[in-house]
Image (cartoon, rainbow, N blue to C red):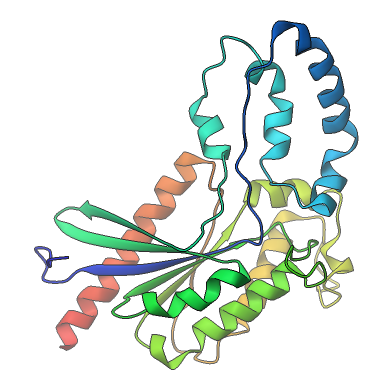
Length: 266
């Protein structure tokens, strides 16, 4: 990619760390099946969803589509923007996205977070200027689909430790995204993080969103050996477009400022 007006190209690696994501297949039910579909799905949503979704390792979006099954099963159904946002597909391999902001070209490389995908990461790291590390903050009580025993948050902490302390990334800005704030807010009301992380502070409330977020953030921050380098972080909800717009602008400014500093040192 040719350099932009500022004389450099922004390169980013987006590490999307999530163990399991599924594509929601939405079919239009005929009118004769609308009522029984409504009855059964209402039962599942109200009785089983909160506890069983984690155990069955279904996608996070299943609950949303089940709650909207009456609308989706209508013969006049047209997917809304929110429906599209809740659709999920696992990132397999390497996907590149190119876009331009005020004359400066950005290249974002999205790599899958599953264990089977990680051997492909390092071919993406050459000339990278920023790493966006995404973590599902709501998965503190779930295990990996790959082995059914490793805690998902522990796994992401281990990967983060490897990335953040790698000498290759000494001059690379690493931005941590603690995603799925909406799901975390719901989950802390009925699941105590202390059951999975006994080191959770006694003075904090395991059912308070802010306390849990600060605890999770501190877990990641503690993995850094280089304390002079700042850790940029954001609490995000990917399906909240306004939240993502705000975060994107903040991240863009961070990346540009870091790269301008590097240019001035050259």
